[in-house]
Structures are given as C-alpha cells and as structure tokens.
Amino acid sequence: MTVCKTVSQRITASVLLLFMLGLCLFCLPIKPAAMGDDQTLLRKRDIPVRIRRQWRETDFKRTTVPEDGFRFAEAPKDGIRAIVNPRFRGVATAGPTAQSPVITVTVGQVTRAYPLEILIWHEVVNDTLDGVPVAVTYSPFTNTTMVFDRRLPGGTEGDADGAGPTLTFGVSGHLRYGNLVLYDRESQSWWQQFTGTGIVGTHADAALTVLPHRIENYGTYQARVPDGIVLAPPYGSQIVYGSSPYAGYDTLESSPYAVTKRAPKRGTVQSAMTDGMADSIRASRIVRVGTQAWPLPAIAQAGRLEGPDGLIFTWQPGTLSVLDSQIVVRSNAIGSVLVQRRAGDALEGVSYSLDFAYAYKAFYPDRGLLSLP
Image (cartoon, rainbow, N blue to C red; front, side):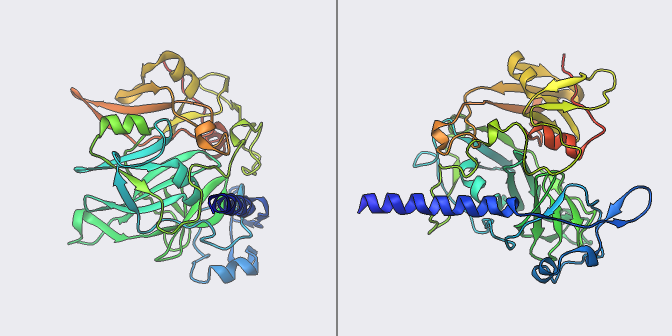
C-alpha cells in the first residue's frame, strides 16, 4: 500500500512538472502596434482569439507594455493555482527542513513564514496579516520574491488607511522577460510581479504597495520566532511538496524563458556602466532593492556590508536552492542575504529580492550593478 502511494505521488509530481513547464515552453509572441517614439504597445486585435476568449473581462485597450519579452502561455489561467485560503501550523509541530528557504513577513504584531518549496508550486499566496491583506509571491524563472499590499492605493475618503479596493491575485500563465505575470480576479487586469505594477487592463499603470520581508532558511526563522507559524500545504493537495519541478535550472547557461534581446547569459550582466559600477560582473544572482542592485558574490565574500541610504547587507550561509535538485533537501546550499535599513539606533526591514541577473538586465537595461565598499 505504501509502495503504491509513493509511486502515485511520483507520477502526480511528474505530471505537474510537465504541465508547469508547458505553461512556458509553448508560448506565442504578440504582434506589436506602433505607438511612436520607438515604442510598441499591444492592441486587442493583435492578441490571438483563443487568448481573448480566456480573458473576456480584461480591458486590452489599456496597456503600458511593449511587446518585447512578452509571451502568452498555451495553458489556461490558473493552471498554476494560487493559494486563496492559506492554512498554517506552529513551527514546533512541523515544517520544511532547517536549511529550506522561506519568505518571512511581519505586519504589525503578526509574523508568518512561507516556504519556497510550497510557493514554487503555487507562486501566489493571498493572506491577511494583522488586518492587512497581502500577496506573497515567487517567480521561479527569475527567482523573484515580492510581497504586496493587496489594496489598491488611493482609496476614497473613509477607506481604512486611505486604501482602495482589495484585490485577489492569481497566476495568468503568461511571462514577461521570464517573470511571472499576475492577474487580479476583480478586474482581470495583469500585473508584473517583478515591479508590482499593472501592465494590461483596468489597472494598467497602477502600482501596488511593496511590503518588507526577509529571505532566510527555516532554521533561522524558528530560532528568531520560536512561537511563529508557517504556511502548510493546501488541504487535499496531491503535490509532493519538498520536490522541485525546476531541477537543474540553477545551472543552465541561459534562461529559455526570458525571450528578449535585452537578456544576456544567466552568468553575466553587461551594460554601459557609470562611475562606481563594474564593467562586467559575473553573478547568477543579484540583490535588488527597488531599482538598484548589487552582486551577490561580493556580499557573500564580505559577510556584512553597508551600502547607500543606510542599507546593511548581511550574508547568511546554509540556505538551500529550490531550483537545483528534484528533491530540495539534496540541493546545493547557496546561502541568503538579509537586507535592512538603519533607522536611528534601530534596523528596519526593507523589500528586496535575490533575482537572477538576466532578469534585472531585462527590466532595467540602462542600469548596471552597483559596487559596494
């Protein structure tokens, strides 16, 4: 009986792996519409009929997205199912291994951990912390972690905290420069996870509020918040959590999913650099805060560095990759970084991400990696 169950789980994981890769392997380009100033934006008539049928409620007349790097998936929206009603359990009862990476978020008096070995299968968790609706997101192909306030900024008078309507996010199945394109279920608008901005639909050009978070291993979280809680797998899910559908992605020479002239090979970021920037930086991962980025290897070598605007980078060894081995516990330990900002005598959290360098180059082609002292 146990053998049959194990075989069934492996078959299920294999089918899901092939399905998730199929979301991106069979992507179709969108034809551009000339808009002047060398910029081309999407038009509704340029979008394949099968896509328009899936997205009847999306306002394709509103878009801020050039066609470069945009790809449609063959699979339907929600092929990767976002988590809408998350379950949690105490850190003392269960959870991933000590070296497994988690995104940890603190809002008010509430702190929670979201294992990447769960997020890698769902990419979005819609949650509420201390009364604040949040979206915890992970894009495996660009290794981007972002946490957003799900309320639209600029609410009317009387709205709590000046916020507007609350959105619920799902996975569109589409990619732009290899990065996850979210959608909100209320307006069916599309959102770029890398930047937190609306790109197609009613909320095109809107910007979500980005929330501070940490990227650390589960053991560090357990020691730091011994009474904390951690995201549990969705009830009834047949996915084998702790396995990875992206095995070997860490070691690819280039990303097959960032289809753009802007993106160089995964190991190199090259561009016209200004003073204080290196000419060519070998770094598969970078540390990004907003639109600024620094090479991860430099921080790992130094252990602790102080950057501009009071930023402090602290290297944390021992964290596993979820993009290396098919079984996460067998993956290489790539480490992690804690980024904080000095605020008087205290340190406060910031929003940051350990992206693949090619993604940063694709989204910010005119920027280079900053050097650190």
